Length: 495
Image 1: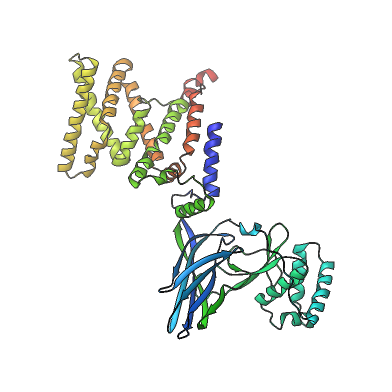
Image 2 (image 1 turned 60 degrees about the horizontal axis):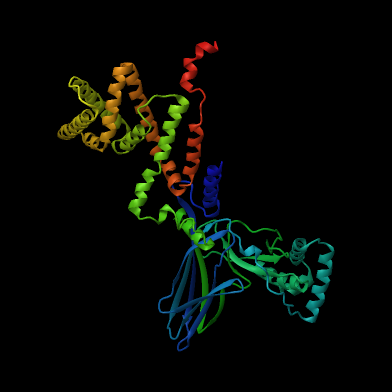
């Protein structure tokens, strides 16, 4: 249980918290969002352009960002939860273009929603507006129960048609941005922290994406989002928050005809890179001290080695639970490793051919009455010679698959031949062939498991899962019940 808890807990943490991909096809859908600023430089004047850029947008994770500003000085600063980029240059002429590009992907992160709001500052209204706002707040308070319903009721009344009081507050501008701005002031009078939020929907690709406005209100515990046009609570999942409090494009100096355009394109991004980014943001060491930190060549080795416990587990299941007879435990696993290079069908044919010829040579040596070690050495020599001859013959015949016979573990072939000959002599040919067939079946099943791309991915990305494999092996090691083949063997007693 300790092994299962440790392995399962670390697996769940890496999967759910860090986003390490479960699928071998570890590509995720990400969005490349671009802000393009165009303007005409005023001759002879220094230029400064401020642009708000995303900072931990809720529901998204920022993977990468790029600033393109040839010749301009660039600096970024974070103030009160808002991040700004400043481009500056002493002299410039004609049309200028600045770019900011970010790669984001949908995630469950929403750390900003729990941030504390700044102190609420009383807004400025004219005397008439102050009277209208006071009356509005009294009416809204009477028809609401908490901050959320207070906000919804305020937005609903701001959207009322043919209301001169609301027209006065909105100044005839009934856009979502204006409603959000006015609502922020009204809520501030009531002592409620609120702010407009700017962004756009990432549900389709395109250029000239319209900038949309949402309203965020702090209820004392977290920020709540509302649609300023309808008062509907909640923020769409595909809404990318670009800036808070003020529109993205801030004050600028020395420019004219300033324009800001947003465009977005959906593309694929490596999920593993996203997991690394998230681990870095959280200060997690889980991926820093993982197999991914090894050189690529060593990673390739471990992609194969880590599947061997899976093959061994298959052998344990076949022998202890099913009851299949085989030559040893590791021999089928090593044969399965050789099958990785020869492919399954070629490997089976080569294995049967080498073992068959080697068994004939072994029976011939039996007449020489050799001791054990010289006999094994002689069989090994014969096996090596047969492999060499087979490689040459198949190469001359144009059968490329025959060359892969050299990848078979020679010692394992030798021991298989020796065990098969001993079993042949002691228990008869049927028992020996059963064990050889069982070894070949076990090696084939182990090969199918060890070469499964999804399982290879899981044990490499989550090697802690091998702790669960170890726990299963330990549990099967204490199994003393009937094997499946024994149920048939003792069927007569049940009747």
